[in-house]
Structure formats: C-alpha cells, structure tokens
Amino acid sequence: MRIDILTLFPEMFESPLSHSILARAQQAGVVDIVLTNIRDFTTDSYKKVDDKPYGGGPGMVMMAQPVFDCFEHVEKLSPQKGRVILLTPQGQKFNQTKAVKLSAEKRLILISGRYEGFDERIRIGLGAEQISIGDYVLSGGELAAMVVVDAVVRLLGGALGDEDSAKDDSFSEGLLEYPQYTRPEVFRGMKVPDILLSGDHGKIAEWRRQRAVERTKKTRPDLLKENQNTLKITEGD
Ligand code: 6GU
Image 1: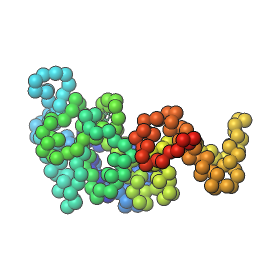
Image 2: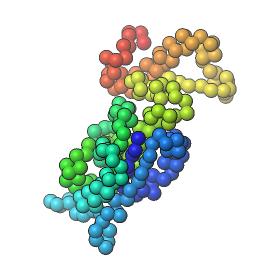
Image 3: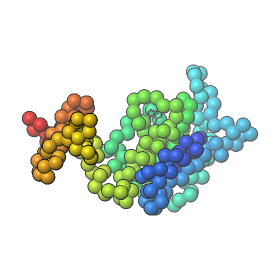
Image 4: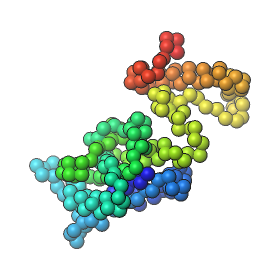
C-alpha cells in the first residue's frame, strides 16, 4: 500500500512513523508512506495557507489553492489512483470496520488540516471523503491522520510480528478484549485465574469469551447493541 500524507507539519509524523510496527512495515516494504508539505505549494512570499472566512466569524480557513496544487503534485507521484480523505471533525467517525475497509486499498491520500477547517471547495473539488476520529476537537488533523495510518497499517499482511494477533483485537469481533496475564503467577498477592493455568483450551476459550462479553456490557454497552446480530450472544452470557 502507498499512503500519501499532505500536511503543514510533516515533522509531527516523524516519531510515530519511525517506531514499532509502522517503522517495521515500511522497512519490510508493506507500506510506503510519503509526506508532503502543503506550505511548499503557496504562491505568495508570505507562504500563506489560510485566510479569514467569508461571512465573518472567528479563526482561519485553509485556502483551496495550496491544497489543490499540493494534491495535484502528489497525485502524479504514483500512477495508482488513491482514495482521498480529509481529516476533519466534520467527518464520519472512524472505527475498526472503516480501518479494515481502508486496509484493502492500494493507495490512500490523507489531507490534514489545521485552523478552523478547509475551504469547502477542497472537499468538493478533490472528491474527498471526510473522517473524524471521535467526538472531541483536536488542534489539527495530524494526530488524527496518524491514528488512521496506525490502525490501517497494522492490518496489512506482514505488518505484525504475530500474524494472529490482529484477528483477536478488541472490536474485531465487536467485543472488547478479554483480560490478559503474563508471568509471574502471583504478583503482589494477585493470582492469575486458575483456568488459564489449566491447559484446557476449550474451557479457556469459553472463560475468555464470557469475560469479554462481561467487560463489554459494563463499559461499552453501545458495542453490544451495534453487534447484536452478528455476535449471537445468548442469555446467561
Ligand atoms: Cl480528524 N481533526 C480535528 N481537528 N479534530 C478532530 C478530528 C480531526 N477527529 C476528532 N477530532
């Protein structure tokens, strides 16, 4: 997969992209992530990328011209057509289902905005979909773009060390993950549940599912409602 990121702050991406799974996936050639600075496509000597909103109001709006010129430059860097995504709090909420869908694409072109938002003609002209990562306001789309990149890239074949671990993730089945334990068996008086030491894989799987359902009921009942049809949760679960 190729991911292009258009941003005013490419340096913000350096650390997350150079550690752990994201670094390994790039080294292994699973993903090619290319950062392009929108400010390099300004045409005036002040390198202006934002301006006051028509109609008045607070804040500044990202201008169409630098974003369009940057996009047209980036688009030509690869023959593959990309799915174009604007990171904005006005977008559809990102979730695991969306991450799985995006992970099937050959190319993503992510555009991070700062300021109060994008000139609407950017969304219209570039045929972009809009994604938000949740119901809170960030000072820019950069962190949101990193969240999307991380969630998508770890799903790509060969990105994770242990091929199985993405299938068991929280949300992948509509449930939060069951409680996990590792050595030692007793830590500060707290013991690992006996069943996990029993070696009975059937009982362990059943226990894990029960704990996952219990946890989800308690902290994220909204997930259970969303997934009622696919989960086949029975009374007593
Ligand atoms: Cl994508 N951008 C900003 N600025 N704030 C957000 C967001 C995006 N998603 C949630 N909050």
